[in-house]
Length: 260
Image (spheres, rainbow, N blue to C red):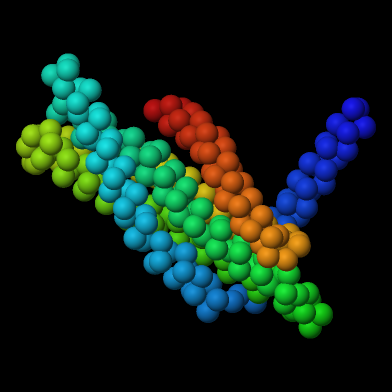
């Protein structure tokens, strides 16, 4: 039993070491020339523009549900007018950044893991190394750079969509006057709420790109291995997003309280 425990711990440590080395090589490839601008722009299109429909639907319904539930709960205390202010803080700080990162990250990480995994099992990545082409520079750096840049942009867009969805429900279902809804939104919203949510998505974007590429490069065992790599990349992405969300939220709250 002790031998099995020790073997398991060594396996975890070895995998963690490989992952950290992969992260280091990925960021070195991003910051050092030559830069593959055309590949990065292409990945930004695939990661960002093609994720707008799912991000829009997610943000719209999250905003609508938040305002609906918050408004009905506050209505019992005669304070439903404050639903707009409370919800906009929750949306910009937590709900929109996390939900957007989860749905977009799952889609992007699965796509990257499947694409790179297929290249791995068909030995295309090995052929690049044989031709003295750095696969990390050619394949990983554009994808990680694209996810790191585009996820905050998508989040800014999703904040607007989520706020509009909440506005529609607040006016139609809760009978809050439209002008009063926007006044309360502007009164409660602070710049710290916006930047804390957006800055978190920079980290989330890097996590999505690195995890998707890492499990793509680690693919083994043919078509079944591609399926396993895709599934594992999605699970790992979701877990790491939630983990970093807790860590970063704690830091931002501490910094905000310290500055105030």
